[in-house]
Amino acid sequence: EVQLVESGGGLVQAGGSLRLSCAASGFTFDDYAIGWFRQAPGKGREAVSCIASYDHRTYYTDSVKGRFTISRDNAKNTLYLQMNSLKPEDTAVYYCAADRRGTPFPITSMTSYDYWGQGTQVTVSS
Image 1 (cartoon, helix red, strand yellow):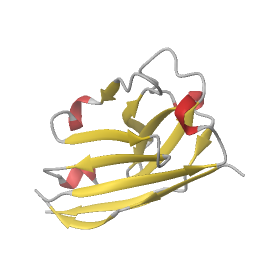
Image 2 (cartoon, rainbow, N blue to C red):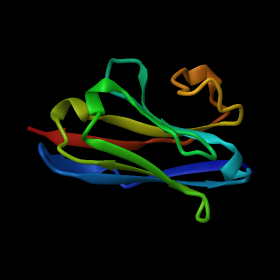
Image 3 (spheres, helix red, strand yellow):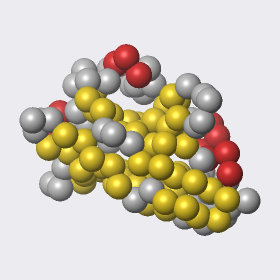
Image 4 (cartoon, helix red, strand yellow):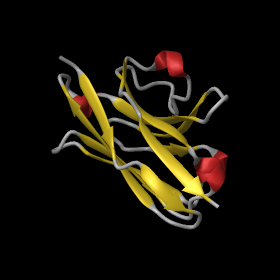
């Protein structure tokens, strides 16, 4: 059974940090590009960041560049998102997703992804 399980969300003050994790199982993690998406209340789901499978190329949406860092540990089948200097507008449910094709990179379309986690809530207070 394929599973992506996010953790690490919570409530933090503006300027604070959180580290999200996404534990994967049931598929060959190394072969997949992995992405983080988020969905704020009343808004659509947007691509935040993604990381390629083998060369670990990364992508960030403009609003998080310089503040968020994506990484993966293929030995642990885990994806991370280090979020620093958090802003109230970062408040959303954060999802991880896995894409087998991996191209063209970056993969920012939701429809490209094969597997999704259930999401973790991040709330940033002002």
